[in-house]
Every structure is written in C-alpha cells, then in structure tokens.
Length: 146
Image 1 (cartoon, rainbow, N blue to C red):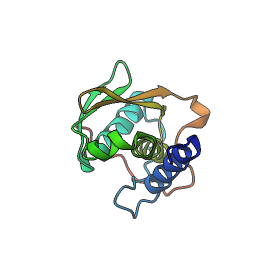
Image 2: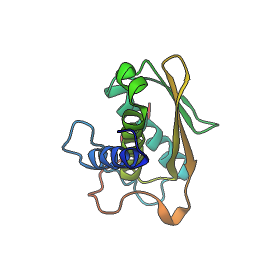
Image 3: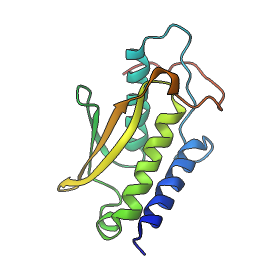
Image 4: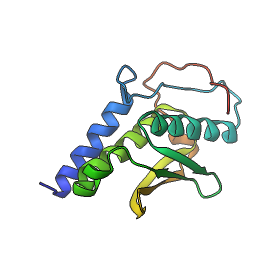
C-alpha cells in the first residue's frame, strides 16, 4: 500500500534475509583475528557489500573516501520505480544486514534511490568501536582482499 509501515517491514525483511547465511541473499559472518586494523576491517566490509550487490545483479562502484557505493543497472528497476518504498527498502535492509554480519566500523546510513538513470547511492558511516559486527554468529577467517 506504500505506507511507512510497509517500508519498515520491507527493510526488516531484507535485513533478516541478509542475516541468514543459508539464504541466497545471506552474508557470511566474518570476525577478523585480534589485532586486525580498522582499515582492513572496513575494506573487508566494503568487499563483502560490493560482492553482495554484484551477485544480485548491480554494477557497483565504491567511493571509499565518501563511504559510498554507487549502484547502477538495478535488476529490479521497473518494479523499483513503481514501488520504491518496498524494493529500495528491502535493499536497505539487505545492506544493513550484510554489514552487521561483518565485524568492522561501517554501518548503513541510507540508500538514496534514483539519483540518476538507474543509479542509486548507498551511504555508509563509521560506528563506534563498541558497536561493530554481529556477535551472534560463528566467526570465520578473513577472505583475501581484491
């Protein structure tokens, strides 16, 4: 129906899907070894988030200095134009859930849809050191950086 409640439910569904590693949209839980630098943790979060959006069909460009991911060629563009309060909020939830599963300083701030033709921006911010990652998951090692 396009209500704010629908948008909240859509975001919550996306976040729940990202937290389930067994689902197609789920993200692995990654906890770096003790002593890993914040910069490496941040890069790992960016890599996992980039991979997530790439796997579901977006073209992704990372703007590291501005903590932004530029998403282009949305695979859900037609539906997103009709129902951004659902489609775009699901993507917000997915991004938040992916970031929560990877220990590090980054968190989702918001997604700004349709800043250009088939172009959206994922805005991130740095969290406090006390609130980094999802501690309810089984840690695994760091993947190699790109």
